[in-house]
Image 1 (cartoon, one colour):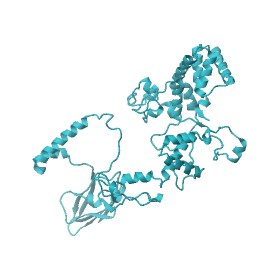
Image 2: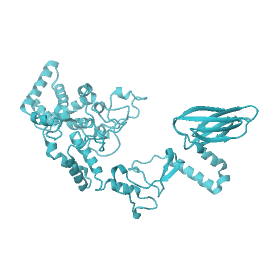
Image 3: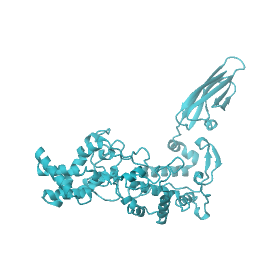
Image 4: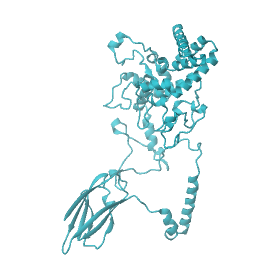
Amino acid sequence: IWLRTSFRLAAIPNNLSLNVHHDEDVKIYLNGKLVKELPGHVGKYETHAVSKESADVLQTGKNIIAVHCRQTGGGQYVDVGVATSDNYADLASLMRKFGKDYVGDAAAKSYRRMERDLTNHAAKKPSASKYDVMAVAESGNNVIKVLGRGNPVLEGDVVQPAFPSVLRPPEATIPDDYKTARTSGRRRVLAEWITSKENPMTARVMINRIWQHHFGRGIVRSTSDFGFQGNLPTHPKLLDWLAVRFMESDWNVKAMHKLIMTSLAYRRSSAPSDDCFDKDPLNNKLWRFDMRRLGAEEVRDSVLAAKGTINLQIGGPSVTPPLPEVILATASRKGAGWGGSTPEQANRRSVYVKVKRSMHMPILINHDMADTDSTCPVRFSTTVPTQALNMFNGKFMNDSAKTFAERIRKEAGDDVSKQITHGLKVVLSRNPSEKEVGAALKMVEDIRSSADLSEKDALDRFALLALNLNEFIYLD
């Protein structure tokens, strides 16, 4: 008789066994391979381990098990069950009970001593200064082999060191003096090839991302794809020249920022031109600067700088600025996992703000903060109503406007005209025109008379308006 059924696995188990009760001879196949053959008959269920026999055919998802039972005389019966297990023996308990008998008294005492040391060490909290950098290191000169279906039991051919062939690299040769008792030298050779002048791809990719940071788009638009499916560079010779300069500067990123930001392309006006627009509507020739809105972190940092409270401290742990109550309430325990930084620490740059999946600062998430669940080669700049609503009505912006107004009063004195002029100079990074100052003064007078506001409240409203000006939010 032949029997056939299927079962599904979400993951490959560490152990696989069959529970079989048969009368008489039985053969059991897994995904077409004979994994167990049992002659004769038994009076009860027996368990047979088949982990090794099934290692090369067992798979996640659907598996097929087939059973052939052959009867030579008398009655006939067969039943087969599949059992999986990821459990391992409790080594600690076995060593306590039988260690002395199996490994000897000295080895058993050594094991107990190391177990105590490990327990004591695990209870100690490491100091923050002890682990400045975490890295992966090699462990000796291990032989790397192909593993069939990713299973460490199924060792295949030996793999020799090599670079990705799709990049048409040179042969990977490891000098003898790179090899030590602790390392094979493979990582060093890889690092040297990645940063080699004979491999300009690394410099091209990096300089393209630096260019994108300043212009909003790279010389190669497909920032993460320099292959056949990506975009061709709009200025291939410029990309190559910048890549060479980058390598010649000893990979100095700061030098590249300075070079790009002092270039004519970066310093060009964003003013339109009908003639140029007709010839190059996408601005591929860089005849003007593409006006762009500041990124999420840039918006918050600019507000902190304008009100004069930004903390430029470098390094250190993440900070947790105040969040609205409605966001803190999304946690299973209100505010759990967020903490409360001091006002001075809360005013640090946005790169240091803690990232927690369920808790984001509204001003950051509304201005297209990067999605932390996936890679983000390019920031998309959206224009949605929630941005304007948050910039005018959000607690962070209104509190910042009041602090900004206090700065204006402190630095410009009591004269309203001087206050307006100084406030516009701070947010625009230039001297405002008489027309701009006059319009702002009229606005302050209008809201004072129409809303019956005090001089202090009116300046607070002006400060909020100034922090919402397009020239403050956009780079042009």
